[in-house]
Amino acid sequence: MSKESKKKISAAPSWLGLTDDRSSFVFLPDRAEIVQEIFELAIGGMGSYAIANYLDQKRVPTFTQSLFWDHTTIDYMLRNRATYGEYQPKSFAAGHKKGIPSGPPISGYYPAVIDKATFDAAQVARQQNLAQRGRKGKDLANIFGGLCSCAYCGGAVIFHRISNVQVLVCEQVLSDSACSRSAWTYKDFETTVLAFLAHPALLDRVGEERKTALLDLVEEIKGLSFDQDRRYARRVNITLLLKQIVAGLIVHSAGNLSVPRHSSAQIRKDMDGRYVEIQLRDGPSYRCISIA
Ligand SMILES: [Zn+2]
Image (tube, rainbow, N blue to C red; front, top):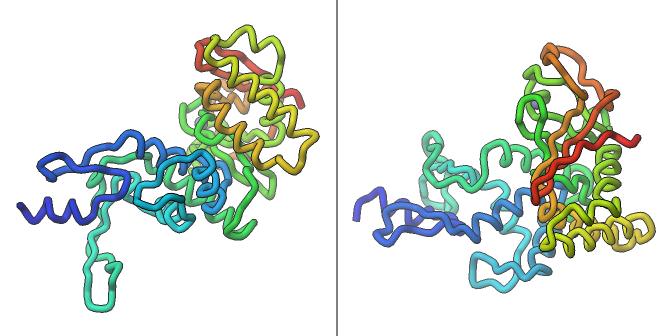
């Protein structure tokens, strides 16, 4: 056995398997999907305790012999750069059980289960969670994690705070690229999309196999307004049901924008004419104008 393959075996993250000759890593699709879901939930505002509880409730099997998910495992996974393929060589000098970084990280060492942008978004969400609500973070601020993309550049539209207002904004805008320099107040966006999905006429437009999910979704949406105790559980459910019904949300936060704005321009909130294109999994897309 070569030195290289030995190293691979010892460093394999729990969501990857090894080929029969134990020389390279392979995807374990079920586990990769769980890791992706954990990142989505974290980006949506769930803390590691809440994610562990949630996975237990759904009886998602752990990656070890353990019967239950542990928040430290979740937190470790969310901070682990191996999720997007990076490997940090370590030296194990006396007294350092976990090893200390030695040399530059190697990218593309593991098959990536998420991309770097998703990893970075999760770090931002973790920091916000730790800063605002402590480690038990029980609020689910964004129910559209992983669903929104920018109509102008195709990039991800992410949950963010601009001078203490929660907004959805194109990632390019935050990285000081040009794009639209516009943001959509989160609350307004959520109200708009949920009102559309709760409309009775939609039931006739989705395929048979999605009707149950849509009915469940409508019930959870309606419950939000009168049932504060179950608010958190309802929002988690909505997040999951949304993914069964909606393939993507294309955000036109500046309406029919013709030219990108200069990267130094101020970010404008809630521009007139803004709309979101709701793509249903069954095919049709609907243009949905802000109802604020
Ligand atoms: Zn954009």
